[in-house]
Image 1 (cartoon, rainbow, N blue to C red):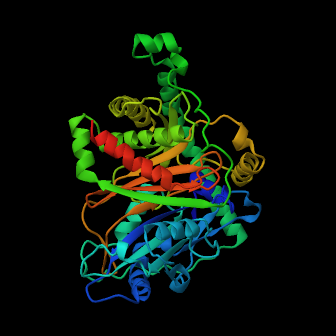
Image 2: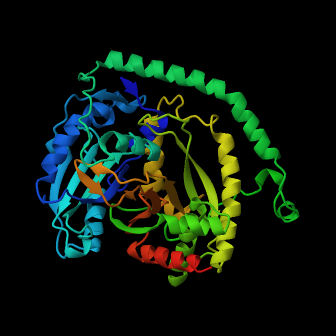
Image 3: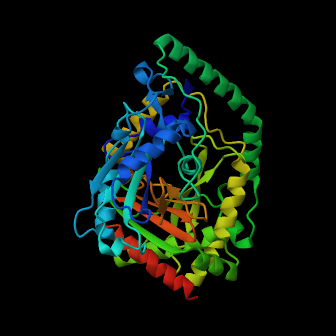
Length: 474
């Protein structure tokens, strides 16, 4: 058995019909020349050969009675791939809007916990506007995997196991067959308690480094005279986020949109202005949010605050679990000039990276958690269902994540991936998520929102495109 970390388990305990906790992706696939049908069957055959390389696809979550400790993963043996790989036809007119609306509907549905926590949906009957590969038929694939199983970097590692860099790869080497394991209560409890003890010992080892980091942060002097006048050293840079329509309790409705931009163009703009690709992405988002909120007459005078995940993984670590923490960064939505916004992002990003760098190796991704399930479920239910999310101050306005991906064409069961759009998670109090994935010379923005927070996220998508054009013109 393998116990879930407290972070992994939290995604299960927080889950509800209003807040599914899976991450997903949307791809356009160009089928090999001369083929137009039966891709779902071919995909099942392909995955059957790769299951030994991707154990996350064959394990099920098991809960201890009363959720006294964190759950554990158990191997399920050979899953029924008919349950996990499905086929639907895209409703007419079969355009990008219809595809994104279908993905929003599929993404709102929770995964069946009695099976391995993943699904893939092959989508056919795409209209002429999506047939973008001359001589080849284009279909779509939407996949989702529970966040308890992977973080962004873990998902990339999983993709490496099932994707290829050529249309005709060599057959994978047979992997070790994993037997089904079902533990009795006593064995499971013993294993879980042993896991808790090891985490307590690991946490104790981290305390000295964590204490040194906290002291260094508290004693850090502001870097400018203006900062010294504005805030005392111990609280410099820490503030609550202004209230926006995104920060409220949400329902089960979802709205999804996507945008693809040129990676070389973004890289060139960044190089011209001494900014990273991530800086340019954040400046685009800041400009889009300013446009959207100003149009709706809800733009705060203060800059918005983004919650930005950062990886705690050591180099070479490709485990399929969550090793991630959150940091906060000011978004210059209060600045009217695109040039000023980019400069402000570069400065804020440098400060954020310096702080996040000190946390690696100190922040635990697992810790002792007796009663963790009760606590997480109670707090999550109270915050969402009681309406506290509508009334309490918030530390962030939205989540923005940027996951670097491969810059070469990838293939799945012989079909070429033409796009790689991430589909992430929204929660009570954070009803908008913008996740970015680079792939093969393109930067794909995936926007997911609760319908209560953003009635039509395509508005924000259009604002992203306008903000990029504005930024490209400076």
